[in-house]
Each structure stands twice: as structure tokens, then as C-alpha cells.
Image (tube, rainbow, N blue to C red; front, side, top):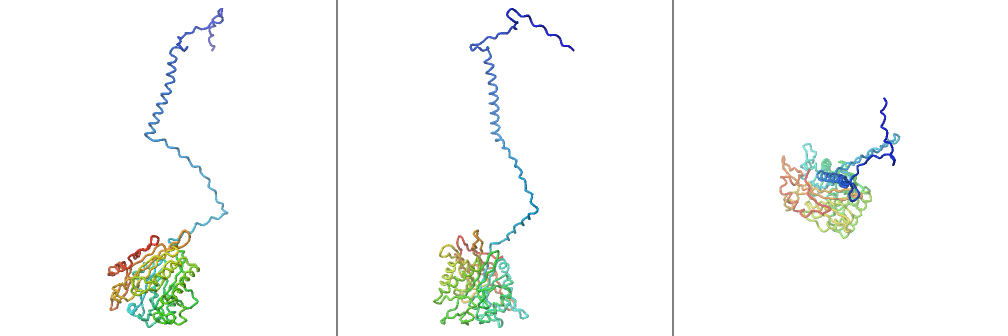
Length: 457
């Protein structure tokens, strides 16, 4: 389809092609068409007003709802290396056993078998059984990492006798072991009551029952101390007894002069002799010897002090301070048959603290409320304890000490007196707890090594 032809342009005039006629607008004083400035102002103002309105709206939204949250960057995945099957995978680390690097040690006082105590264990067939003594306290004893008992007297065989020349049936060794004790201390003033044979047989019987013996030995070339390991901590244990006074320069125990061969089988010191300083130096050397043998924690069990006195005497305090100065970690004391105070001593150089239990009192004995006018205190005792912990620098330090008040209960059954150790908190331990707490008033230790009362398990 064809398009229509356009109209021809007008013919040119004398002055050239014709120009279409324009409409002319009046001008203002600036040479601009009238009204143009007003139109331009309106055009400029409108965008400004819109921007202001949007800005105000944005501010209101921020005030109401807070700023818009910043987008959380999406983490870039890190490629995991594929293990080389030729390279063996190392085994996971072995978990540290609970309690590793920490040890609790328990020590109890004299197991002193008077005649009535021996008779109480006799059975119808003529054998002996003393497990009743320890049955109540067995859970507490067994809970310790290491439990130590003082076996006062001998296991020299029949005839069985109590004071003044003690020899108990072998069954007491079995009872101690079954109760949870692992170490038997034999250094005491009655260990030579049956002579040299009684001394060495006692060692044999205790060892046969599975107990480690410290304080005496069968031959002079045996070790003079024991080292046992518990929870990764090596514990050195030594035990000594005081010698009874003499005038001949020889060793006497319970007033009996030892034969020369026996003197090298015991550990003893003489606080009444002029050469007591030499004995003190020998105990300090023992501390060095145990450490040189690998002991990280050292324990001394001392049979010392004055009977029936509830406070330590001068030679006990002198020796205790010397041991603290030498670096000993704890001293457990027995012999006075009553409880004495507990102290925490600081070494002379100020770098070391040592708890000393001057006396635990008896554990089991036939001493009664009226023994030597003691008004009950020979029936009382304490179970002594310390807790030691390995420090960040690798050393081992005693961090706390404790005591558990106990009472030696005596009841009559079938015409015989029966014995059993019970907590002093038991209602049958009449007055015992108050007596022990009175003696231990002020025995609270220090801020860095506290001494506290403990309860039975």
C-alpha cells in the first residue's frame, strides 16, 4: 500500500524561505520569561522536601526499632586434610585416674593388748579373733590412701601376756590388715619386752599378714625406712621410739638393756642423754636419706612424750622443730596414752610448714575412766590425718591436717569385757568428744595449712 504524498513547502519569499510564526512571551527584568523563575523554584524545592521527609522517617524507625542488624559474615569452609593411610593415628591420651597427684594418709595410736584385751578375742576353739575392735571404723580406715597403725608390744608367741611384758596373739596382725591398715609401726618402749627373739618374730608375723614394718627390722642390713607409692606420690616413712633413762651408756627400753646385736635393729633416740643433739642430727639425716631414695613426701612416727600429760613437753617441741627445719612433711606422735595438742610449725628459713600431732592417745587398750586418776582421757583418742597434693612446680606439699575423735568402748558380754573403737560422736562415748575438743582447743593450724575436725565414714 502506498503512502499519501506530503504537502509541498511554501515558496520562498524575497528574504529566503518562510519561517513559521512564533508566540513571544513577555520578559522580566532579568531577561527571563515571566513565571519561569517561580517554576524553577518549585522544581528545586520538591526534591529537597522529599529528601527531608525520607530522612525524618528513617530516624523515627531507628529510634523505635534500633539500627538494622549488621549482616553476619558467612564463614568460609576450611578444607579438611585427608589423613594419609600410611601414617598411623596416635592413640588417645590415657585419662588421669581420679585422685592422682593427691594422697590422704591416716595414722592411729597405740594398739596395746592388755590381758583383758587379749582374753576378749579368745574363741571357743582356743583361737583368737580381734576383728571386732576395728569393725566400726573399718570404712574410715579403708578410705585412706595409706593407713598406719602403732603395734605396741610384741608378737613373741605364747604365753600371751599384757603389762608389763606385752606379747599378743598373732591374730592381731591379721585383724589390723583386714581393717585396712598397710603399715605397722613397731618402734615403741615395749618392743623388747620378750628380748631379741620376740623383736624379730614380731617383724615376721606382721610381714606375713601383709603389713609393711617400720621402726624395727630382722637384720642390720635391711632398709631402715619404707617408701611406698600412692596415686603417683612416693611416701617415705620412718619410726623412732624414745629410750628409757640409763646410766651405763647403753640402749634401754622399758628398763631392759638391749643386747648389742639388738641395738642395730631398732630406731631410737635418748632425750635424757647429753648426746641428744647427735640423735636429733641422726633423725635429720634420715630425712635426707629418704629424699635421696626418692621420697617426695616424708612421714615420721614418733613414740615420745610424758604419759598422761595432755600437753607436749620441751624435748618433743625441740625435736619437732628440728624435723620441720630439715623439711619433714608430717610428724605423728604416740605413747602418752592421752591426746595432746596439734601444731603447725614453720621451718627456720620460713619456706616450709609441718603439722605435728604430739599424741593421738590410745586406739585400743584396757585403760579405763579411772586409770591413774585420768578421769576418762585414757579412753579417748584421735585418728590423725593429712592430705598432700602435687603442686604445679612438681613438688608435693601437705595442704591440710585433720583429726577424728574416737573412743574405746568397753562392754561386758558373756562375763567378758569386749572392746570396740567407735566415733566419739556416738552416744555411748559419754563425755569423750567434749574432753578431746577441750584438749585440742586452739589446734587450728594456719591459713595455708589448716587443722580441722573430721567425721567418720
